[in-house]
Amino acid sequence: MALGYYFALSALLFSIGLIGVMVRRNAIVLFMCVELMLNAVNLTLVAAANLWGGPDGQVFVFFVIVVAAAEAVVGLALIINLYYRRGTLDVDIPQLLKH
Image 1 (cartoon, rainbow, N blue to C red):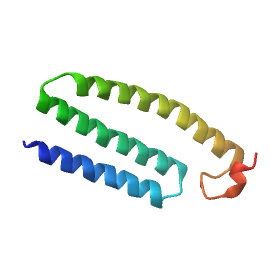
Image 2: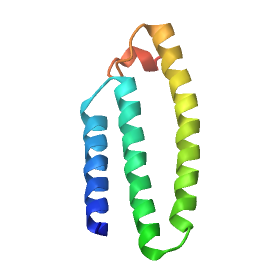
Image 3: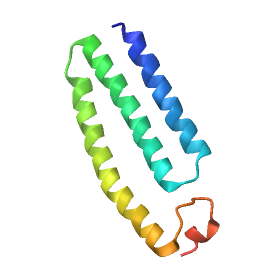
């Protein structure tokens, strides 16, 4: 399969994630869209590493996955705490930032 197809799919996934971050206001949906954007970058790195034949892209993907896992743990804990304290996950409510 040509490298351009991987880049096109990655650009499509990144665009969907970016549009989701800009349009949606639910914290969980924003969280999932950021994860989608990280996976699009991972796809690009793996495709480029396959093209160049070196392990550099796969090493970067490993680090991105580690960061995404840490983000998932901390982010979900914050989202659960936010919902427990405020009763909503809407990021447009200004009262969430007062305390």
